[in-house]
Image (cartoon, rainbow, N blue to C red; front, side, top):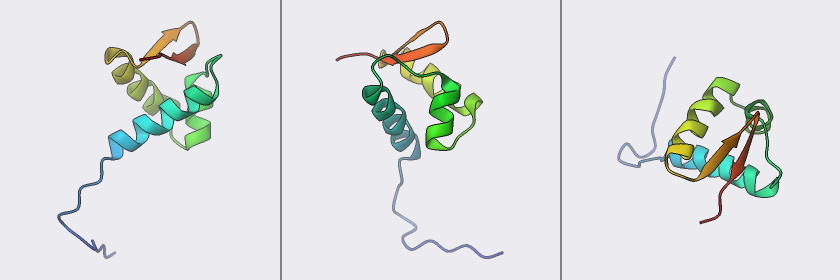
Length: 74
């Protein structure tokens, strides 16, 4: 197996992209989504979504209620 990198100094903010994907989905569905629905739509596990949502909730960017998550307005 070989791997190559076109620019070894280029930084990709994967967490920022993932956060953005989750937040965009929540903006599209103001009634909220479950972690399973979010994971299905962006192609990651429900557990991974829960981790992202926990971080976003700590930052005040989402609100978790019952089994759904809603975006907050800043």
